[in-house]
Amino acid sequence: MAIGFAISSADLETSVPQFIPITSFNNYFIMAKLKYSFQDKSLVSIKGERWKDIPGFEGFYKASNMGRIKSLDRVIPHPRLNQQFVAGRILSQSIAKNRNIKTGEPMIDLRVSLSKEGYQFYFNTRRVIYSTFVREINYEDDGMYVINKDGDGYNNCVKNLKLVTKSEKSQRVFIRERADSYLKTADRSKWKNYGGYTRRLPVKQYSIKGKLMGHYESIREASQKTGCGQKEIILVARGIHHQTKGYIWRYA
Image (cartoon, rainbow, N blue to C red; front, side):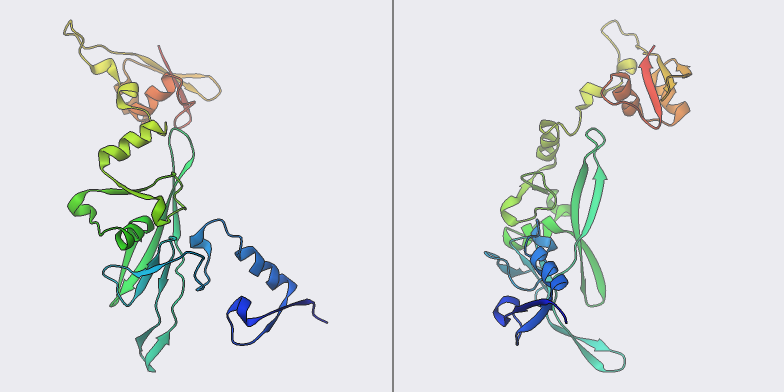
């Protein structure tokens, strides 16, 4: 005998009451406790959620102020049936993770794919939400960026989005200590001092186990011969990073 719970139509928005096995009930209960809105695939609107047509995709897709995107019911051409009805659904959003060089923490971007008239388009989710609820933006024209106020790339609720310039975005990275200023890591070995002579800072290359692997007259030479970036060598030599590409660097 199956064990489960009777869920009313009001709970699941179905036409008739259903008998739900315990395992399915648990999944239903877990879905109600998802951390981020975009993970909720139910077409039932979240409390406080509002939907608007995505500019340029009116009649095809809507975006919500909670960061979700859905396709609308539509009829599409079919090779055998002539036409086919396709029900609307909440779209899955892909997660792009790029690890921050300094902190090692992942930088999150949610992306979504929209199709129209046989063409596929790929967008950053936060730009779609901002363009839908605040104002339309075009990076090629204005060069503006949309950022998450709290730094959480998963949280694309419209109230968590902010439009900034490239300069403001860069300053924010330094303030949050997720990158080092160029002046802090620049290779000064090629800079001229007031005496007019070029200064060179020699460096030594070590393995992770501490074995001396090489000696170079400048950071530029070390970079050319080992393939390690000049900036990365400087960060390691200064003790800011532990290693780069399996090597430890020290000023000679």
